[in-house]
Image (cartoon, rainbow, N blue to C red; front, side, top):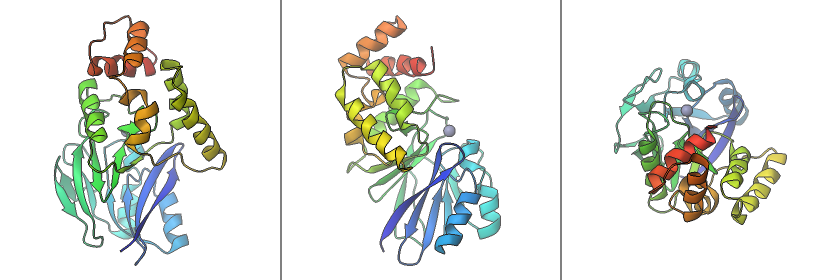
Length: 257
Ligand SMILES: [Zn+2]
């Protein structure tokens, strides 16, 4: 079996990711916040969806589920601790499962923080992280805590085999502008910004990415670095003693505080 990954732009800046089996044109849908762009792609490419995976409960990740389930009778996998429409398989952290149509083993990773029940899906060198890690940024805190989100980002950073990471929003350029404010001396930020602008001018996603690249310019993965700790201490007026403190006040800074 060979697979390919397709980004379906959805709503204003979301991506719905598809894992497509090239042998039989079946597909897994991740976080369908709308149904129409999926359906038109399926019609156009003659693709048959076989399952939906959901990372968390937010409307821009789940609003397409009902229609897709109605039209294609799909099983829906999602976190057991959040309300997900049409959920058929409730998943817990560290669960492992296999989809019958795909020869892929999935592992459920705890990504609490953006929401308290947020999960990620690891399979075959790919990681689907929803709204937890973005290129050059990370998710906002809704009902999770800064400590949880910090731990979740560390968990992603330590995933085995440096997987390719697929997140759910095209926020890269805005995030890089904030990164430059925090760390004006970091040339890697400008390099990534140039690359991201070129991709967006061609209407291509700036995603996916890897931790190996993100660690060079994403301030939320660099909260243990002296330069970031200093900048965050100066901006917040707080004493920053460790990576978690640094992360907490960096997140507040990005939120405008
Ligand atoms: Zn969200």
